[in-house]
Image (cartoon, rainbow, N blue to C red; front, side, top):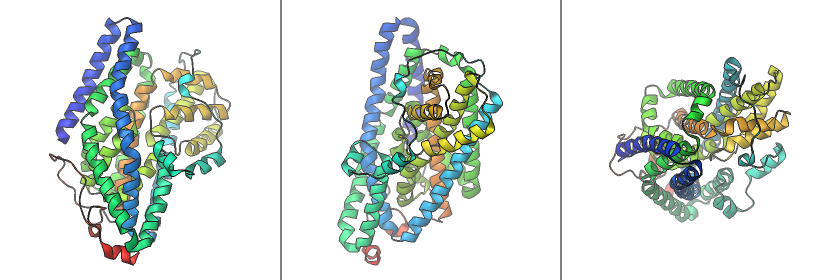
Length: 438
């Protein structure tokens, strides 16, 4: 099943580019936009279905994982190691972006012109107090309805710790959460069968409207940015290999399908359910991945952070503004804060970039320079987010000594593993003694 789906996704990508190109060159612009909107409908349906899965999947996996963890010290230790990894990865990602954009200087000579910034959204100054307050949910149901991953994470942490402390009294709710997680993963299998059509529609939409010529116009920026992403991949995988050894190769094989989904749809959320399943098979216990991935999707967006630094300095270069290293370091620290907790959806990075430009007195209208090709850049940075979170989750699991033997890479009917709490996974069987101990 997995091998066929991966093949179909690749076929969908190729056919999407071909279909979009044919529409772009053979249909008048007004009708091309109509065709593109129908292409886009396929990807919008898929993303809506995936977003339907995200909130209950995160809630159930975190609650079950923490409830089975039992040891609050272990939870605190894993959380500390995760945050430490995220901070280091953030500095590497943003710092690499600053280094490469200063080395290549792709913004020098870029075509500067006015354009409509409506697609960027409202620009608000960075407010650290408001950001901290926004982390904590005031209405859990509102957080669920808006897919606010960070707030769902906070509530789930409280719920998981409370159920663990309740002991046997909380066992029925934990069993219910386990059943919910199993159901959501079963639905995920159904939804993912639509992925090739969504990939086709997403790429056909972009190419139909912009054509392939836009890539030639910005070939330098696209090439240098993707070179930076590949370099970042190499760094992350190399660091992962220090902890995982030869199993890093297996990890890359397991996550290639979520990477393709993220790349094609430019949405990390679209790849999240499949990433859960593939990490299951790699040997990551669900109580670890259920805790790490939601945190990573809020705090560990490596590709988005690199893009933010790269694009900010690119715009400054395009307008002939020479920024000192001191200013660039301040921009780095600002991006470290402002990039945390952004939604893992298309174009979220543009809002961060625009806010950073406004804060440092740089031309906000410069965002128009990258709007035309942002979809292509977004595809690469989103795939990088998936790689970064997969490596981080696997490394923390290995660090905790909880990485299990991997399952066969391709199985006919993928489903969530059903292991007992005793073997480290949050499965369907409940260990009452674990709850009695609290």
